Length: 89
Image (tube, rainbow, N blue to C red; front, side, top):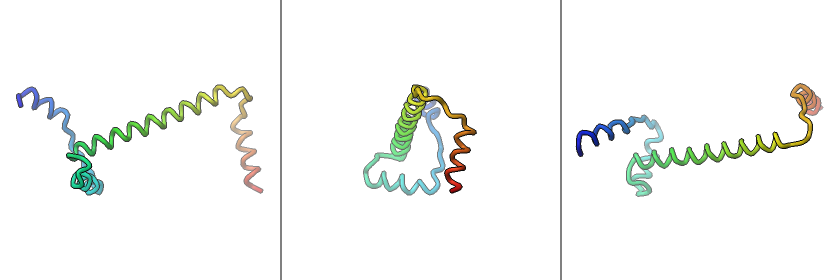
């Protein structure tokens, strides 16, 4: 590996303290599910990205539905008065 390649690899290196998660990572590697700790961490980050993308899509859809709703808006103060009244009973 040349100097330039080593420098690039060093720039991509991150040291992470996994704490109690380290055992779960090691078990996955030992079981053969993943080839290395790096692979487990990458898979975890990709899963997080998928989860966040799904949440963002859901929130965007809710906001679009709300904005497209033709019914008149209810002021927050009125809404909370109604909820307090309902749950005092």
